[in-house]
Length: 426
Image (cartoon, rainbow, N blue to C red; front, side, top):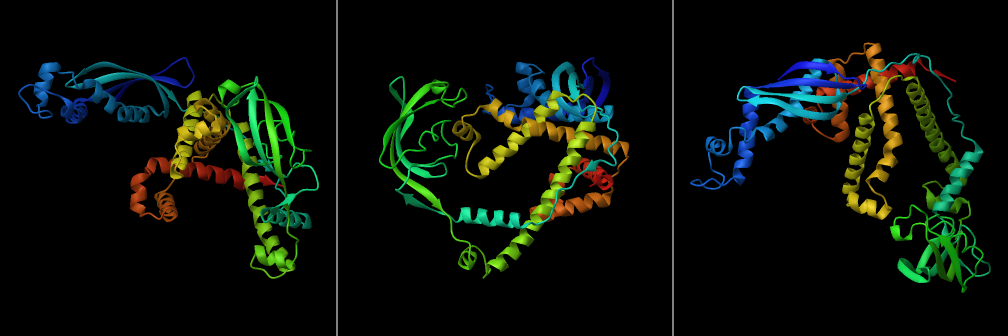
């Protein structure tokens, strides 16, 4: 495979590559396609799937397998050509075969490449570190959260419902006097103030008492998942059966023994000081990292192709889909449950995707400016860490993670370390 031409187009970060694939490589691809497709081809005089390639080519033309063979060759050919040209492809706009024959084939590709960026003043970045002091107020807040987690619901009969209560209700919804699908339930437990229902629904239950029957009026959001209800005014008839209030445990030694392995409140508070202290240190370190990252993104200069944001967004969605599948749910079911489509899902990840792309480009640019190198020892150390983390043999990790890719990741990490070590932390 060889790069014949590399021409920069007028559009930023767009190049036209003319690439040739030699005859040996093309022949292997054709043979592989033939072996895959022959099983489906019927030729008179031969058992299905047993017709020789030369017979099929004679019947249908010598080029019968060319298109599929070229498709199989494109990825490696483009990768090699881009490497030769010194560019990194982030998207392929067009592919066009120019000529093909036994001696190989030539094609033209219009590609979007990773941009050349600029960054200055990345050393000595000033950041403010959050306080890691463990105050009495923080300990009290931590204990309050534990009390909330260990609360119980008790039935209330001497007052109307309040925000924060859980009510047991029957409800049925109507639009223009007609009941609609999914708008009815009996014995439903609803936490008032949770925001789980249509805006205004929970607020209008507040103030009503056990045994009351009443109606409330709401308006469905324009973005509601059921299209037929979007923006519609609705009436819900409510029967309030029960009001349950949250009852928190008393903070004493008995409480401590229930929620921890400590015996007294004083011992428990000392343990919390240590736990909260570690958390504050971790949070402060992360905040420093976030401040540095934000500053690097501000300092980055250059035009970033939209394709890079799209690729990162799609990668994040694929990762999310894999996590869903590990939990026994597929993406289609999830989106139906959440009332989302693909574009809405992309919107969820878009902002984070942009940040990741910008930060990566900033660090790659710094790595180039600083001539950061990765040694064999660096690679071996990283492979060993990955093997330990994934409980895999190091050689299997090496087979799964290309050295070129890992090298780039290590360069980026070294660049980040350089910036952090030079930062001025106040």
